[in-house]
Length: 92
Image 1 (tube, rainbow, N blue to C red):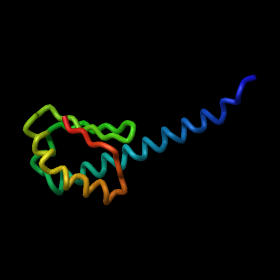
Image 2: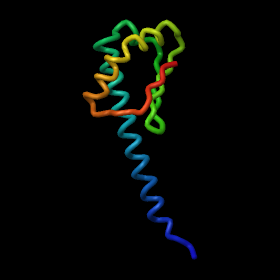
Image 3: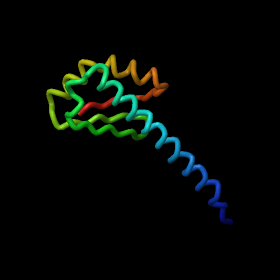
């Protein structure tokens, strides 16, 4: 009547570990992108989130967000070098 919950818990733990690893790799790749391609924007207060194979980059400055949009090709190059592939990159 009841299924064992051990397998479900094990899958959740593996999923959390995988997401945590991807998030760490994403943060390292984004820091490398900022250092190499966008050094003037290092201290602009970026927040990078990873959820459901989508990356959301938030900043409080609209001008910095527009500059990131203009350099999106360089960002995707850095992400590909780190073997990070996402369905969507959202910059706000």
